[in-house]
Length: 305
Ligand code: GLU
Ligand code: ZN
Image 1 (tube, helix red, strand yellow):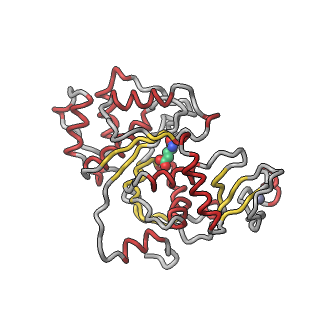
Image 2: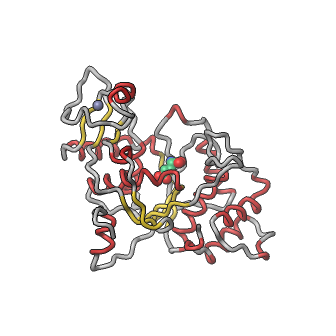
Image 3: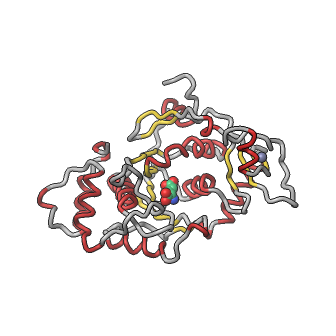
């Protein structure tokens, strides 16, 4: 292991004497900015299968933290689609929009540790000082200024730039942008994704975290937050993205087509083969529920590439 990789994940895997069996709780955490598309179906399936093939639970959390980016009705559409593909979640769906008091309480823990500060810099002011990497200008502003709308940033000292991923192996981040003090509450008063996702995953006991590769560069920041809250980070699986014909990530914002649910067997087979799974010819005529049940038995995480 590299000398400079002194983060908690590495320490835990090498130093733990008593191996605790994780409960195995996975989750799918869509943002309701549009209906389920093929890329999010793949993420849903992978997180479901990793949890279920380990005898675990699979949770669904709606990441509706940012009302302006939401599309009315999308949350319900996503849930209906998941059920129609035979992906049934355990327990109640959690909505981030209803969890402000949890995030506020966790923010106050960080305030008490004196590792956060109030930042009044506009994006332009930061750009004028240097190339968009935040320079820690407002470190020391430990009290909110009531006259100003301010973001809350957390001091990020480094030491979290590497971690082990079950699919991507040992990952290390070098860019300056990955080490800057980051925002945990925005100046418009909304809690930032980085804080909310860690609070929720801790509170829900998520220990097997499966999600798209596009989020992998958030992992060092999130591992730092786990460290601040004195919690062990989850086991990570960052899965390969689904790209469109032009090599761009399929996303709601780039206009990914809505799934044609008349074609569920084909879509599921395509998703499983994107995830490297072997599809038995006998399954070509199976319906969604049969396919999900089949792969719960035959799923092999190590085939994902
Ligand atoms: N809500 C995020 C998304 O839809 C996923 C966040 C995560 O899995 O950590 O892309
Ligand atoms: Zn500032």
